[in-house]
Amino acid sequence: MIRVYNTLTRRLEDFETREPGKVGMYVCGPTVQSEPHVGHGRGAVAFDVIRRYLTWRGYEVTYVRNITDIEDKIIAAAAETGESTESLAERMGARFADAYRGLGVLAPDHEPKASEHIEEIIDLTSRLIDRGLAYASDGDVYFRVSALESYGKLSGTRPEELRAGYRIEVGESKIDPLDFALWKGAKPGEPYWESPWGPGRPGWHIECSAMAGKYLGNGFDIHGGGSDLIFPHHENEIAQSEGASGEPLARYWLHNGMVNLGGEKMSKSEGRVVDLATILSGRGGQAMRLLFLRAHYRSPIEYSSELLDDAEEALSRLVRFRERVAPGEPDQAALERFREIMDDDFSTPEAVSLMFDLVREGNRIADAGGDAASLAGAVEEIVAVLGIFDALPAPDEIPDVSAVAERFGVTSSGAEAIEDLIEMRRVARAERRFEEADAIRTALEGAGVQLEDGPDGTRWVRL
RNA sequence: GGCGACGUGGCCGAGUGGUUAGGCGCGGGUCUGCAAAACCCGUUACACCGGUUCGAUUCCGGUCGUCGCCUCCA
Image (cartoon, rainbow, N blue to C red; front, side):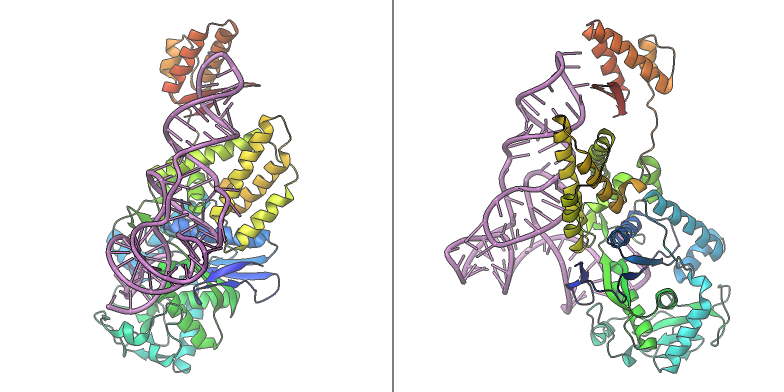
């Protein structure tokens, strides 16, 4: 039995799906206003692993991740660069797609865009007005928070407490400061769609309610997102969807922890971000993905270049083991253990721990000349569920060894020069001229090439 | 101020009422001509103060500290 932590109840609960064997999953995707950063990657990887695991457990998973491509922030950002909101959203959407691919995040089954669901949004808004849960005012439409008794159930906030100190934006025509916009009337120069309330655009939260409803219906299984979305975004989503349908929106609410930089949340608005593109192009996505997986998805994690170095070293152990031992039929006891671990709220840190236990045991057996194929098989299966090697590998630039080649009179260049130097060293060793052999090796190390002598000859790796 | 999370060994980071997390780093060893890789051993901790208990890092209470949400945010 899978157990998941549900933000709604703040407890671990048995995972029972709406329909046997099927999982409907909606994860809040990004507002495509600026470059994706490490925090976006963390969330995407967290839910990607959950999806992969549920699939591995035999569920038929329908995975929906939206793109919010029309929103105040996008309008503001587009105004700054002088491009249209469509152009900016498309450009940033592509950047997100690249980042997800680099991290090995599988494509969702549906990736709906807010701008392509205006009709559904208008329908939902109309329904809320009909039910007395929303009102039009001056070209805007607001959700009437006071009309929904259950408001606050996800975030554990009480409306009367929220009202104190709440601020109303200039130009808003709310009745209650807690009311939030379902539809915003367009100001001059802003992009708009026609609606029963005049030209305008959707509010921030409504698109998720509309699209989740369209692709997954009521009471689907998992709704995910970053913990910073619990309030107000998810609270408002619940208000909209449940207000309109009278049924629960989702059964389990899962939230990933934030990524910290220097102890504090990585945040665009604070200017404290590390762009994913920089990391992916420079160091690949595999170590980054492993770094995410080493902590539980709900815990906050720290990001730093040093921690990524650390993860790269760990990754290297794994890579070497996979190169060393060919996988066979997976060890069933190991997979059973993996299942127990992941059933417990997707405890990837323990899964990673198990994986390295298997690597060590496999190496031990291989050192002794035994057959570690079943352990390698288990590692392979775990690695696939964790998706580590679906992420981009580190770029394999060939270190520049021209100075070393010149010193030892090798005329070739690039990888060939390294091979020639290795051959030169092999001859020297065979003739027991160890000083010369070691000189070649030391020189190569200085150029970033590590030599490893094995039973099948010498291989090299980047330092 | 309200709500919530958390304080673990040099660093990151799991977990448990009494018995080895794991990774990285560091020290020693095996192997090797010497290295590297791999393996073995060591570095062995749970913020502080009370309480419950035969026994608490693990449960309860308090103190201190850190962080998140309450405004856009994965």
